[in-house]
Amino acid sequence: MKTNKTIHVQELGQQPYKTCWDYQEKLFQGIIDLKRANRNNDSIQATPNYLLFVEHPPVFTLGKSGKIEHLLLTEQQLTEKKIAFYKSNRGGDITYHGPGQIVGYPILDLDHFFTDIHRYLRTLEEVIIATLSDYGLQATRSDGETGVWLDADTPNARKICAMGVRASRWVTMHGFALNVNTNLAHFDYIVPCGIQGKGVTSLEKEVGRVIPLNEVQEKILHHFLQFFEAELAIDLINQ
Image (tube, rainbow, N blue to C red):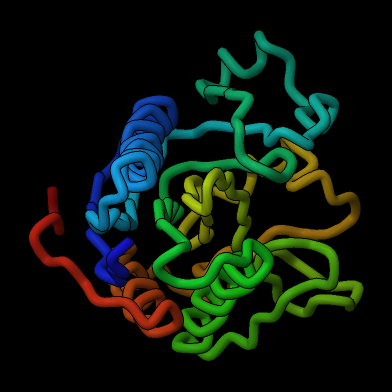
């Protein structure tokens, strides 16, 4: 197979979670189908890579390893608060998506980069850590807990970016959710990521001002291309 480190970036605006999930599945399956065809036909057609940026209306999603009791609202309360709920096929437990949050869905063929899911997750974390450093925040990992934290391993530990992925045949989907100007009150309705006793924060809360999402997104993209040693395909931006 021909190596391809070009990333097609698509800015999807605000979309319902299920709409974007279906779109991810379409791109994800398309890459897998092309890989299968290459193998069966002894072909070398390069598979594509995508990075989707999206903002979701309020929604809770439960990963494959999650526990439903980590959702602290009844179905009626979800309806009253106008918060959607989905059981997802990503890894991880329960998390929240909503306005003011940057959600990134890398749909990559890791055969172009490195075939190591552990390294893939650590690289995604490094992208967010570098982005937060641009705002003067010293973010880190927390041992055994995927995602990005501030003051990890202290009584004041608080999560600022959640992550959960799915992979098949070295193709990835789902990704990360960085709290920028997010309504953190919605996290009170769940046990975030199934982790008891630790807080959740946002970039706005930490720096004391509202920050434009497009500004943060540009920084994420810069570091994403840097750490994955990738090139940007400009033809799909703002689609």
